[in-house]
Length: 568
Image (tube, rainbow, N blue to C red):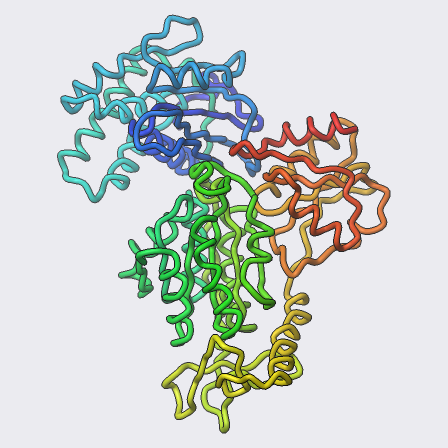
């Protein structure tokens, strides 16, 4: 950052930006470049994309929280709002702080920077197409960013484009930056320079899931594109030449799940990814994996339903669907990452647990996780240790040998002289169809005996420290970090609160902190009916109330804190 401390307002906690425009105007590109600029300048950021399901038009925003410490929640209002579209300006301007500044063309207000964006865009590349890069340059100066860093990020972002395109984008950013210098935009600088404390990653939730799959030994993914999960197979496809992963875009979700099951039967660690509508089509395949005891990892990226619902918005409405999907009874794991870092780690665990117990593992993501960006340090790849649970060779091998644990050793077909069978009908220990009802009873019990061991694999939820809380806030998945911040805000205001954050949902483990306590327990969920709260109730947890949000947008910590205050 190139502003002096005397010219900048010191960053005591965080600074917030909202960049908005219509779909098709390159808002995501601006947001990503500015986010990357902050990261390379030594800051931590959290960013979330908010967009409608249309190719052009509608309200689209990229919200960035910049901090010199951990960021856990989006704000209620913003220090800087930047707009490329008149209608979006009207829509988002009410979110500007009273002392904040806005940047959009044609403004006359005192605290508004009004640059000639279209004119500078035409000058840069002979087209209004470069308006987003002009705006990128302007923002870079407002936040005291180095132009050289911006240029390097643009080169990386457009490395697959022609030199002329790269040059025009760099020139557009330069013109915007120089306009800001000439018009003394530096006086609006919100951020104090900070020396970078090492290289960090700017990573989305989908990218973290993909990296976790790579680290977990995944060798095959089949999927049909469906928002917000599409970024997973896209990333694994782009990097397949380096990882050796076969990424197959199937013709539909039924094919996708069955391809993954086939690859897993052959011995490859395999996965598929989808959203609610696609998962509906995969349900018969899920039961197939349950009956054949073939390992399978499914990423279910939730979005508001039913049916098509709001394809580009966020919700936590598929928990009970994931838990009860499939005909018949068979055990499964369900995980729900709280952040990008957690997503990476849970993917490692998902592949390990699926292989060890020969059961499906469902990862519940959502649009908030999938399309958000986090600042992370590099993952510790040296700590990765993959376990091979396959039997190498065995006399009288039986695919479904009845054991005390319920776990039958698997074997890769063709790895020995043993016949490796799998059948969707009820089968005997060798894997051959049976109509003997006594064997059916034993096989059903064998599959469920695993569940007791699976329960022991589940980590307890994270519990924030508190001596004698008045309020306990329970959250799962992406609400967890937001709830932690809300609990801190409540405690600071005199309402002693504690956060209980779940990322490993099933088998369900309930800590003593939720049993027989005098504290009021509130479940925080992005659904209408309190799906996780109802599961906790079956375990004897006394839920005082449910704080729900199901309009397609994520919670903020202040919304949760205010909801608690109203309930009290």
